[in-house]
Length: 368
Image (cartoon, rainbow, N blue to C red; front, side, top):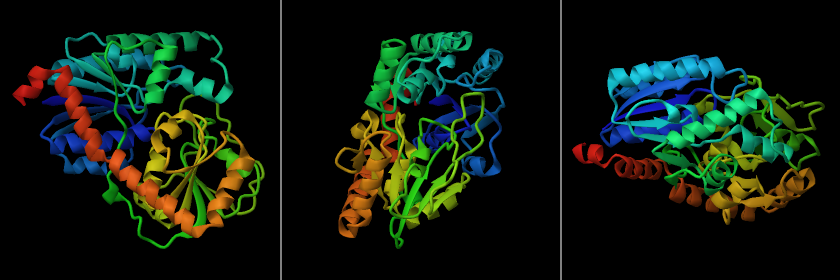
């Protein structure tokens, strides 16, 4: 089987793509990879050096969720079309909505990682204002979904958002994201330290909640401060509380070290279709304290402590509860780790995608 994959280099989609492609290559799949959103760093692409079965085409075209991306999406669609004609893949795996509408006779799987409308509603409590750009964006998403042979979402909640704000796909599946447990170290000595990670500028991540009141242990907030595109940038640290350290995005090795040393991961998100950071923290032996939003409940119920969404005092109380009860904290850490390995292993994710590919293009799967 020859799979053409589109991805981006901006956020968690890149990590997801790495895990998936690595697993697919191990299963005998040939991959052509195109990325958008900016050129990757050498650190980001190191894993590709070990995979001869992957042909890589990086680009700097804007992503569809970036305001002012209309011309770039048109140009990148043409470029993608030329690559399809050149390499003749058996199947398209598209991690952006727009390309589901591309004109070709190749079956395509469109993955709904997130979208602007559901993000806006989760953060602002209402639909985004009807600007010309948001009208264009909604049309592009709907056309891409309509053109998909199958649509995948990383949680049942996210699939529900697709159906609520755009359309009900003719064929849909929920495939949870996965990570490789061996990339993380759960065995080191833990410090009474609280970690959160993600796009610091993103209101949906809600990292500033950790600054709203004094927390019961030192806090580290790690993530990108520079916002790509023109979506609103609303992280204003103001006066950081005592014991709060704001750090830039770390490479994977350093991030794994930081997670390994932390006792608790605080998932403060108001919007999270899946959330790789809590998964990585669970695999690192952290107890999880998560905002009580539908997606986190779906993914981590029984394996995490939940606090009321966007409630800084309840977050502080939940953290205080675990900090003051080391035995219980360790119990929750073990629950999270076991849950992560059993439900969100990268191997399981790759197996589920292979099953979907076989269903979408059975002739190709049989030939392979």
